Amino acid sequence: MARNGDKGPYARWNVDIILFEQNMSDAFKSGAIPVGDQRSHTKLKRHEALEIFNAIGSYTKIAKKYGVYFGTVYDIKARRSWKHLTKGLPDPRIRTSSP
Image (cartoon, rainbow, N blue to C red):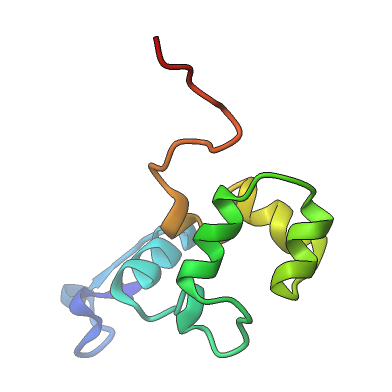
């Protein structure tokens, strides 16, 4: 159950019944849940996450360069984390040749 505009009482006229997935989506969109470098425990800045996403080479070497784990590099490149930055960007692993 979610209040309309997240204000007012939990009364019939002021609530919508929504699924968990919709509730989480709304929370991310409204900024109630911080993402990326807005989170308090993140090691990376936005530009570093984009550099990792675009980096070519060994995931282990990339991880060492930025002081993160191999899995962090994998998750960024697989768009499992920092996807709000990498969404819509071309996959840097796929090279397009020019004529």
